[in-house]
Length: 342
Image (tube, rainbow, N blue to C red):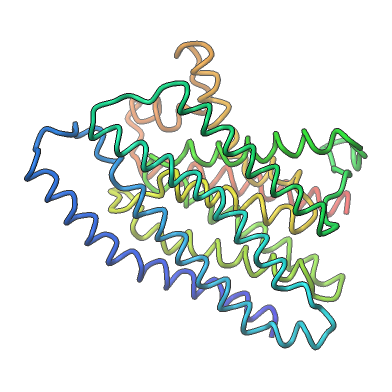
């Protein structure tokens, strides 16, 4: 019954995201037509994507949140009969953390849209406030994990095994969270890349959660499995609207929500270091973009996936398959790491 409900969560998320995307796409199209009629030259064609993220991100929130809560309600009585009473705490921690990051991204989208309409460029102060907001959310997430007794100091490092980081676990965790969420955000613009890679990442987390459930009484990790299933289904549902050519885009609101969701799932399983493998497509892209920035465009790295590869005549849908392929390879490495080191 419990595993069946996880599949129900994925199906509900897929259907709900597709359904919510229909009115959102209509509203977005109507707003764009009204804007173009009022000021045809107000926004350059290459910046039209800046109007889509607000609606797209909210569609992803609604679909995943609806499926997760509904699936949890279906199994809450069964979990309670087994003596587990922490379901609502786990649900609010994971969904609340993802939405907190999503709210930061939603604020960024609103600032981006308003500044684009006013033809004002963002400055370093905006970026500084953006990073500070992320640090606050990440810090609150870790504090909540510590209060729940689920914040450990042990990390499984590839090729080394289990290492106790002690007090260094806090800054390392903060760095990993911020790095992951921002890496996911970087992939928001290429059609389908963000949610396509997110589907593979969430699916790998779901497989790991199900494997771990075989070894213990269902509890926090089962709620985590429900969330992973909901995220996977929501990504597929949103891909219907986001596949090239996109009618809706996740933007900072949706991409940061997705990044926060993956972070919550990793900590829910007690294996945050697996983010390095499972989110490889995002992290490599982020490193490439960082190299491009530091070298002033001389080195593009894997960030070329949405800057150089298109110039090399890569078709845009190919970027989705490339991102999914890298996520799948990283996911296989994560599963292998779990089998090797436990």
